[in-house]
Image 1 (cartoon, helix red, strand yellow):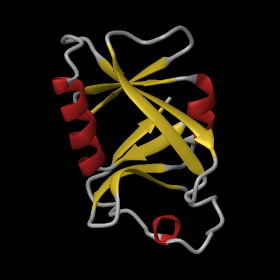
Image 2 (cartoon, helix red, strand yellow; image 1 turned 60 degrees about the horizontal axis):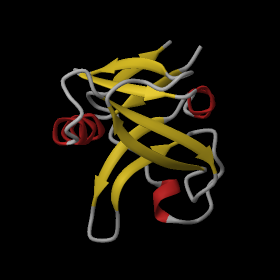
Image 3 (spheres, one colour; image 1 turned 90 degrees about the vertical axis):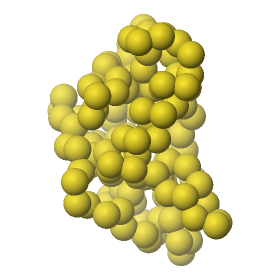
Length: 120
């Protein structure tokens, strides 16, 4: 079972990307996550008209999220957030299982109020 959380800020960012992506009403946000980076995860994302083969579709706060199998495994227990500060802007992943590397993003904890819990 995959369980991850999406903060309201991340949900708003994903919704905007889909809305302005020009892929139609059934479009979704494809999030491909791999191990690495300061927070323990690297991510690539795109807006797609439909899920690719092997993607699982999650409905999150009115938007569709397409996740490949390897991403679902890596996102288990993770909180997906969106940060916009003078030094950082974009999706942020808070993984309680990851050991800190001393950088700000890995030690920062996301605001857990109003989280959307996703389980599959």
